[in-house]
Length: 348
Image (cartoon, rainbow, N blue to C red; front, side, top):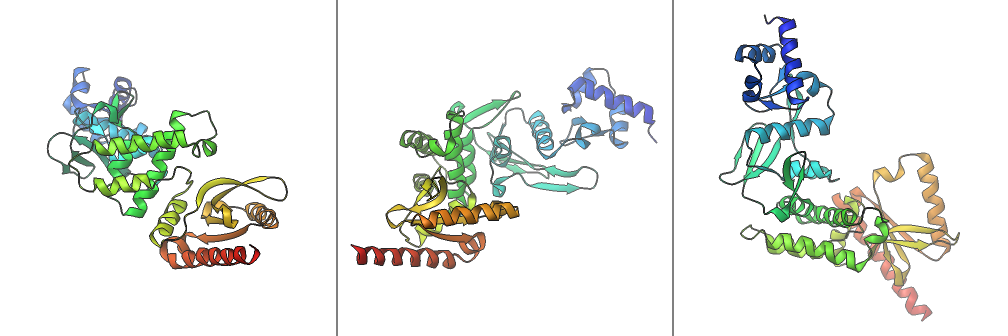
């Protein structure tokens, strides 16, 4: 049975040497610790090892939240693979991209709990391990950002690395997120809702994506990916809005404008998910988060009434009606468009 006082002092030493960050075994030995001390501390649960030969104080892991645990896992993987760059789902986590579909997967372990699977890119052969996935390849400097001494793929490269293997509707949602993020990063102090409607900012973000895509020569699916990039919409504010737009395009619905202010009869400008302005139709993609409280429901009711009194027709749909059974959403929109077009002819 390891001596608790000795294993505790070993944990404290590792914490001091690494400033509560992962370190490799060679560094620990260079600071005077012995193999026996390290083995005893690991056996006693005073140290944890996220990658072979990499050590972290258990107290640091136990007190960390999900993001911090992912960063511990990333640093541990990079200590084993110093030539690698952080990419794919791990880079998406570093950028905090709001799309659960591309977040790093986790495995559940009896002692450590949830352990993120780190995704890296480096030259040579790709491979999978229990806590690590390595993609073969390289990335030029213009595709990289850096943080805390390690390199990771930038927003455009991260989005495209992930989007290329997603179904088209999910790829479009991720590209929308990437375009919006590119615009916000370039002009962080400005109103993002206004910026995403600016043709100059939209063109810069789209061209950045297309240039990055062109630099991925040799990958399958680049032509289809470039087509999706051109259909991207940085004004989309949710995955549901993006998938709704993809369904409209797929079913050849008259395409709306996205994310614009509409004036209600109460004198307030209200942001609409979609508008068919010449028909005075508003489309609203109602995600769960939009109505978290009763106050949200009341506020939305008053908003819709103000818009309807101003002559707008409001068409709504949910996630189920756009994703699971999109015929419901498409029929609802098409009926509104047809009626408004007929009304326009009668009053012309």
